[in-house]
Image (cartoon, one colour):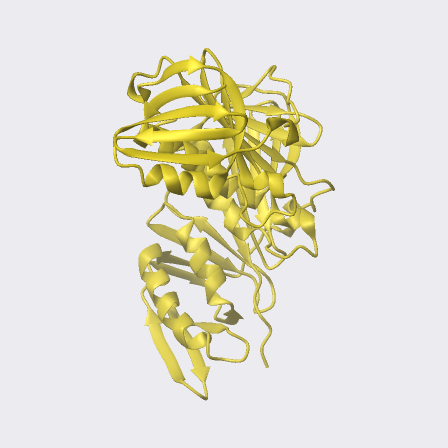
Length: 378
């Protein structure tokens, strides 16, 4: 029968991290619970939605936890309800005691709350991933890769493989990440500091966004392990499992143009502000596009909505080279692409009004390219 006491705030923080893997609308009702496993070493909190699973360990040696373990055991508790209760407790410590089978009492100050739990035997087993020969990555580096690519993945389930980000390691140290929804693409290549076994996997973009939320900046590095259809990201206290997407990712390298007729270098924030203004009106148009015109070195943006009005704006540029051009596109795609850049300037290269155009950071030498497909207009 479980019995422990713990710092309320630290416990709540760990519960909220674990809860990120728990869906409130789950087809399998038992997955709306959080599993609490108490051993002599500490407490493990487990949450899962079938796609993602998080194990969060609070060690008995963690001085901030104020953890005292009196007796061991495991229990399932309704996640949302239990976390709301813990967040409402009045004192800095709480006492968690199982008084009879699957019934617990939470005591904090003068507050005493009794809750019913469930038998852990009902909880599905998390598929084990062999923890051998990990790939080591700095958390900051991995989160940057996710930020620079995951936004371009598809949100449509009609082509499930495109809802993921393609991670490929070649030559044991050359990592390429790429995402596309067939209208836009974002690709980043980096050289790893430590070599690893080559791999080729597609990770759901939704899982990667959750990873970014769970692994905070104070977690310096992460170990990555692969199994047949699973990947495990592991730090000292957190294990984050996610299923991989099955199927072959399209060959995106062939989409990247090799020659261009027009190139413009923009200040990223000025271009983004101009596109934000243009988008306000483009949302009211039938095709939701903005037209970019490049004429004798002058670049301007145009939107015309018969119902709402029009935008005509000359955009500041750093440099313009090549032929005149008129091209229409979805401004949201360009805004998202600019948000992913950390550089102050961007080089945008065009071939023709109907061919995809590319964005690359103009001043730093990183291997980062984005692609946007234009919209044909009458």
